[in-house]
Length: 456
Image 1 (cartoon, rainbow, N blue to C red):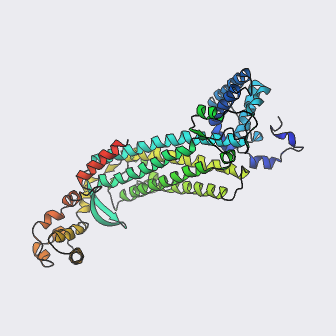
Image 2: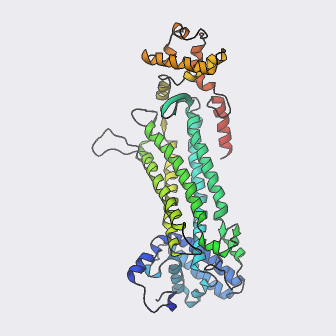
Image 3: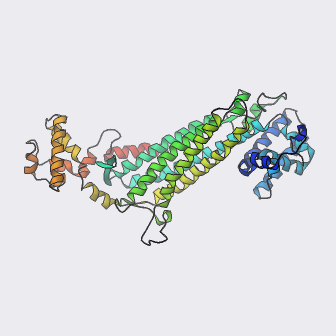
């Protein structure tokens, strides 16, 4: 069969050019969306009288037959037919004859491919939002069980202040909540219908673009036909949101790697999310969180790749824009796969409560509370800060922690110290006293959990 666009040409396409410019090897992922969009388009053509009702019914029946073959794995896509649109049209014509050629009336591959990608991204964004919710639920499960579990909080990867483990892991709930909200907001841009924009200037046929948009579940129709076919900012916005989410996932994955190390031993990952060594039988490697860290880079790369493709393009459609799909597909699949692994890995993660408690009892992370203690006794904070610095230095030099110092030793630094300092410095008390809104005290964490659960 000759090219569907071949009437203008006197020579066949160079085979190398055909192979390099064809996109069917990857845009076949849009097959379902292409058929869905085509059915909506042909329904509109029949409703508006551009084609007859019988022709519309025949084409629709043919498209559904092609859909059935697609689902049964009976279709073989061909590079000769370049892309998913031409392949589907070829299957349709083979199914119902020349009347299948009327399907393309009033549309171009330019608005067709844009519609397919809007549909694809709309469906997958909604799926990803549900996966994010699943990961948030796993975080809430762990947080609910460990309100009273205390571990060292860190800044600069140095022990800073004791905190509730629940408070720490809920940080990732709120990061994912913002990620989810970004995706939900991006659906406003994804849910626009380009179909009917034609190649760039619209069409002479009396199309009802709103009918098509309604049938496909879009919220609005692009008001400018050039914009409809020539921009991919809706993909860039999704990739941007995906990159931010993968950054958050990578940070959590990094902490899982650190916490599960022999040096920390704060958690143990379930065996089903780890692997062993081919030479060292004692090893239990946190491969899954390591992979999540790495996959963040490919998502960033996809975003930068598409930004670079689009940055210098004149209006309207250009062949460069064929490079928009592989990165989008890869980002969707990477993000979906990452979230599918992350939720059960969090759910099955064992928190080593005793190790965390021991760690927080063998450091100087309660030093700030001595400063606050002295302030309540009337000492200016700057002066108390200096006093505590000297006490910590003394403890380090004498191999003692703050709870190990005698009252005589405390009195040597300030007469304001009383026996109640030992209660103030207990890790449980340090955490419980952080009652400011959003703090790590058990009472505030419970309020935070209540708020978080209300968002699910």
